[in-house]
Length: 193
Ligand code: SAH
Image 1: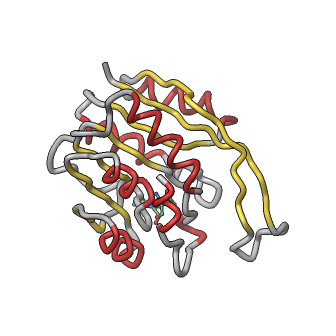
Image 2: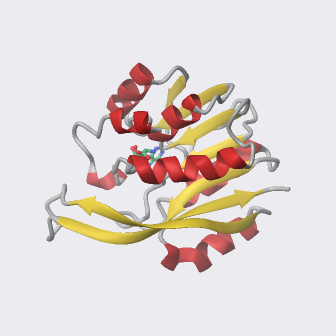
């Protein structure tokens, strides 16, 4: 999974979309958790808010039968489609209607720091995309766990925290006051079974 290091960062990150490339080691850990459960190899994988393709590439390397990425940012999608064989769709997850069913979803949605509730449509989209039969692996702040549990419950899913990391975020937007801010991020598994 060292190959995930090669995924480019956003060329011009947009704060309003909370564009942060997931650190490769964090993405690799979450991908492995899913892989150990048989959720990647030979599966149809969807990467919501795929950005430059971090989870898409990981899923491809682990032998997913298909990889589909969705993002609103066309420039990021171009990067992703250049490094990962897959289908990349320019769309807002709040509007996108999954044209088919997927087995497994990965996502590192906006944490809602810039726009409250920006992560909400991601859970609903994931639920629709797996047609309530697969799993969704995602990153979120553990302090929002109660909210996440409520979202899962409303969608008929179970929620489990699988990992947590100290996740460094380097200053990249004008409102960032410190060069590196470390905050805790957790990996979750939402499942319909
Ligand atoms: N998955 C990538 C990027 C995470 S950053 C990685 O792990 O590195 C969050 C991503 O969600 C950005 O690429 C941003 O453009 C995208 N995004 C934010 N809101 C979105 C929305 N409503 N619909 C689709 N994509 C969205």
